Amino acid sequence: ALRARRAGRHLPYTDTTTAKAAAAFAGIPSLIMSHLALGRFPAAPGAALTPGSERLPVVVFSHGLGGWASAYSNLVLHLASEGYMVAVFTHADGTASHVSAPPADEPLPYQRPPGPTPSPEVHAFRQSQLQRRTCEVRWLLSFLALANDHGGNSDKDSRLEGMHSFKGRLDMADVALCGHSFGGATAVHVMLHPGSPVKDAFRCVVAMDAWLYPLAPSALAGTMRVPTLWLYASLWQWEENHRRAERLVDNAAAPAVHAMLEDAAHNNYSDFGPIAPLVGKLLGQAGKRDSVSLQRSINRAAAAFLQAVRTGADGNVAAAAVQAAFGEGIEAVAVRAEPRAGVAGAAAAAAA
Image: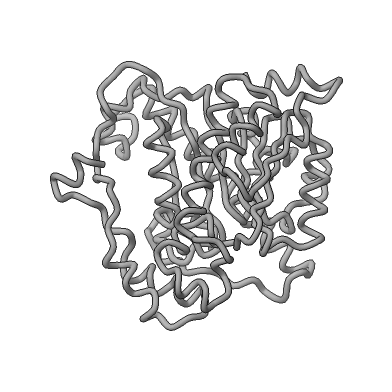
């Protein structure tokens, strides 16, 4: 980041089209979000990995409804500063504010559901998006493995051009899956859907305000077999979503840590709170806590959990690490400290 700043190569935070689309998704005048296209963040296009021989742990991040790749830059950059290679992409399933969708880079704005939620039509609509997202996660893992094996060999794939420094540097046996809102649902769906082709690729999950309505009954009856951090903002929580989360935690076969963020709102995980705190408060989406300090705590808590899992800590130790990151005012609880009897071997295998 420092080298990018010195070279004046900060990446644009987003473009004008996405900024306007984000305003349309939020139902506010585009002028309010237009400043997003003027922003920059400390990342350089085509930057090489820091020289070295050690393999880097990987984090795959899935955004929520109306999000896009850079909308969680504070979290992503924090994890990168902790030594993770973070892969975050804009989903091309109609849930992003705007994306140029493959294969022809056609513009794809946010797709509104075909009716009110809940309804059978909307559930089927969201299910199809979850299936698309699972395919995109699988593609991303395949691409990262390709970059790890072949570096910048564009003969293997033209998109590898400029990725020479990635060869042999990614620890594809140490991959975490994180997501916010619909991205949290994506992470859970990837791990629990019976037909998921990539659920064994992940060591752990961080689910931030996971919106569990779109999950199929078969997924909700499933068993999380890797350590999972469940973060929930109290001002966004409601009984049905909480009940579904409790069911998944109760059925977990691996350590599960739960933290309720009192007086926090749904947007406190993304950049929206720090970038536009007054707008968030006017829309009732900013919560009662200082958005900058809360997001820093969330970032530290996620990193602390990932590190605890990497060192083989049990749920109590992981919860203590998360608690230390949050400090006073937020309680992190190890709902399940140890793998459940009878499935410990499966949980260990999934984390290996």
